[in-house]
Image 1 (cartoon, rainbow, N blue to C red):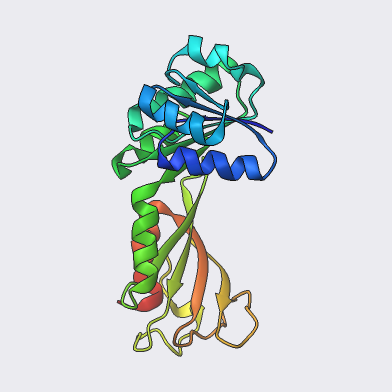
Image 2 (image 1 turned 45 degrees about the vertical axis):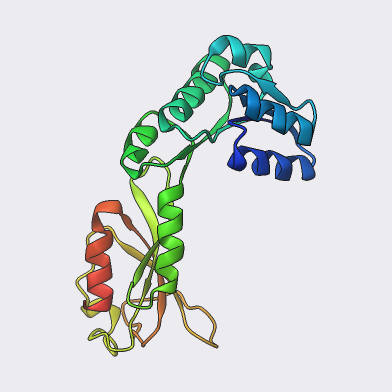
Amino acid sequence: MYVIVVGGGRVGYYLAKALLDEGHEVLILEKAAAIASIVSDELGSICVRGDGCEATTLASVGTNRADMLIAVTGDDEDNLVACQVAKHMFNVPRTVARIRNPKNENIFKTLGIDVIVNTTNLILESIEEEVPTHTLTHLRDIRDKGLGIVEVKIPPDAPTIGKPIRELSLPEGSVLSLVIRKARKPIVPSGATILEAEDQIIAVTSHESEEALRAALSGQ
C-alpha cells in the first residue's frame, strides 16, 4: 500500500517508521527544511520537502496512485486542506486527519474526511479509563451516522443495580449490545437482563444521547 504522510514531526516520523516496518511504501511531505533534513537523515529518501496542501506538490509525489493520505501536521486547517485536495483532486480512496481542537471535528466529518483522530479526546479517554468515578467512555464513532460506540460502567453503588433493563428509561435509538462481567462470559443483553455492580455495557447511541444513556444506566 502506498501511503503519503503529510507532516514530518514526531507523529509523522514514528507513524512512517511503523508503516515502513510493516512493508508499506511510504512518503513523507514536510515543508520545514530543518525537519525534512532530520527525517531524511533518519529514514532516507522517503521524505520530500514540500507543502502537502498544494496540488502541485501532491502531484509531484504521485498522489494519484496513493492508497491513503494521512495528514498529521500540528495545524488542523492544513490537515483538512491536504485531505480535501487528495480526495477531490487525486481521488485518494482513504484520508486520515489529525485534529488538535475538538471543536473542529464536526466540520472535518461534514467535509468527508474518512478517519479523524482527535488527539485531545484520545488523551481524555485514557485519563477517564483510570478515573473510577467516570462511568462513560467513548470508544469510537460510526462514520456518517452520527452515532458512537460507548462503554458505560455500572458503579458499585448505582441505584440501577438489581433492575432489569426493560425498566430503565434508555434514550430513544440507543442499543445495548454487550454486557461484560468479571470472570464470566460476555452476554448479549435482553430486556430481562438484571444489571450488576461493575457491569461494563457496550452500547450504540447518538452523540447527543450519550449523557442521557450514562444517566439511565448508572442512575447518576
